[in-house]
Amino acid sequence: MKSFALALISFLVLFNSAYSKSRLGEYYMGFGYAMADGGKNADIEGDFLSLSANSPASDSADFVLRFDYGSVDSNVSDDSTWELGLDYIYHYDDYVFQNGMFRPFAGGGISYLSDDAKVRMNKDGFTWKLLAGTEVLFTDYFSMSLGANFLGLWSDFSQNDFSIDVGLTWWINDIHGVAFEYSHAFDQEVDFIGLKYLYSWQ
Image: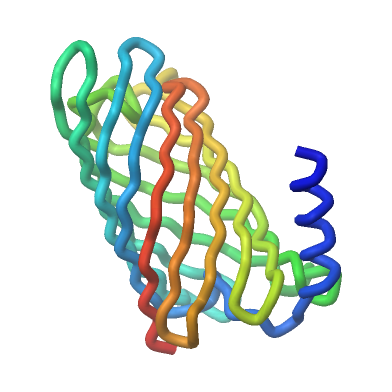
């Protein structure tokens, strides 16, 4: 673990760049696959497909439209889950530091969740979400995202969860990119690990 942290710090120092291609402020679509594993009340294994579209709302904010569908197997039952949502993300470009290497962001979102598998919440319905984090720009085409999400149901504020997200993004060129993404939901005790293809037209 110490060697990994040392290598990461060395990477930051050697490849810092102020003009990297970012996941923020860009037009792109994402097509992903993720595996889910864990579960608080049951042993859960699932396969998820995701589709997302990122569009700048202004020079310092983005809209993210997203759809996820998953098939989940557990020792209780086999069910599906899907979510359609819209997020608004504000990136603090006026407060970047380390020569623009760190790009903090915050925002919120709404969605509709159908979760028969109970892998995200224990009920279906409309959800709210608060999010914050930072993007770390290593090179012109390689970045990492660190974030946290607090989400819950509109109909029952006692139904909520907190998750952390880590993503590594490599833009192969100005159009095509790939991302490795990891998320852990603390209340539901589920891990998501996935790959995503990114297509940018800006």
